[in-house]
Length: 248
Image (cartoon, rainbow, N blue to C red; front, side, top):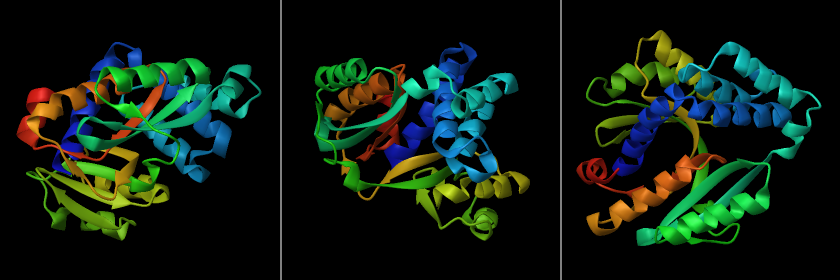
């Protein structure tokens, strides 16, 4: 999954640029609002909200904006009630499975636009359940494998991480979604620099994609990720890092 984790790093840097332009804050606020509506406004008892809030902080979203988003989720605001969480499933070039997590106030419009993105970039939108079975929800923390070794990450295991996996130049720390905040805190206390930390849908197996299809696949992934209603995109591609850097 070298290409997969490399894309996570590229996406994180891309979102940092979007945050500076203010483009990302609407997505972050929407994710916080829905997480608060679904599980309550206390991050201590709501892992999804804790992750959404931490992600917003990572991109320097102001505290007042974060609190307003939580308040919308726990209050009676019509805008919060109108937003629903939708998952679209499909296939990209090379037979890659793609999961698209969406937060939308207009299911019909969003569905049409997601389908168009798949069609335009050589993919196809599938039926519910067509690819979801290939993925498992996990907490995933990525650190630089050149700077750190597995011994540096023992603190993560002590804090509840289940595994540390070498993935190209990266090390991926895997844990239950509910343990993500504690594992991240343990790494930060040990002064381990974190490249990204998120609740992700981890694929059970990957599909190797050759360079001929890699460019088209990554254009599909980027088009989905750039959509205003898309919260996250997950896929089971395996693309060599040097190829991914050329096409991403």
